[in-house]
Length: 314
Ligand code: CP
Image (cartoon, rainbow, N blue to C red):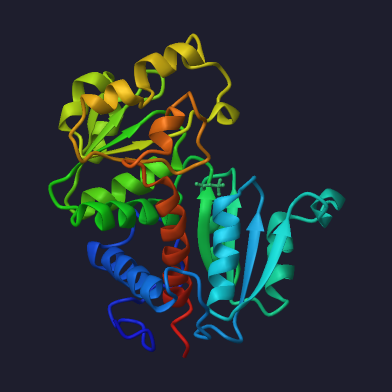
């Protein structure tokens, strides 16, 4: 791929979700990510492809991976970065969210990367700012770059997406990662199962064309990939199961379950992981796990996204 010119089929100024990306656009992001990974020696070296551009992180929720990954991706491509945190900002003095974003934009920002607990926040900014906007997670709605890096990690390890069976296991109800994965995986031809306790997995997910399952042991032998989602206690008003121990007994990926899975099964987790809850430490750190590869692929997907959104080096 020629990293000097953005593909003509890419016309978007914002990345707000995966739902509204076509299969062609998803493949452009994935292929660009692979090209950036190669051109930067596995995301370790710099390219001056976005020199003179400025990227602003506006994070209103905690983050380790996404925030640092976007900052590093921007700097790897020669862009300047601004890191805004709501704590310690003038929001506490009564400034509105939109005014805060407009003031950051007025510093000469080309793209705002926003994370917020309210669904639709990235869309709202795209309507109110002149610069580009990337959604870094809006409540339980979508986390497009996480979905895309998960899909890239599957394609890299399995060599394809078409026909694979991918199970998303855990707290589906509150997971923006689940939604972004479902839209992307379905568009690229994978079969998707959502699996977890009935309090966290509604039958209505079937309306998105996915299979709904409540028994991990029943679906396990059919799965090529498991993506283990964290239980998001911070988004729940009541406990969705009697105890974490009971959840782990029914849904944690452990060595005993690994022995009953396909020999080449791939284990993903978007992170942060809770060791001993959705995954045991030996599986998280074992050969089937691509958890840290996902983090590296996150850098590649975010380099590709910034490059595409900002129209390359033009
Ligand atoms: N996976 C993910 O979004 O991680 P962070 O919350 O640390 O950014």
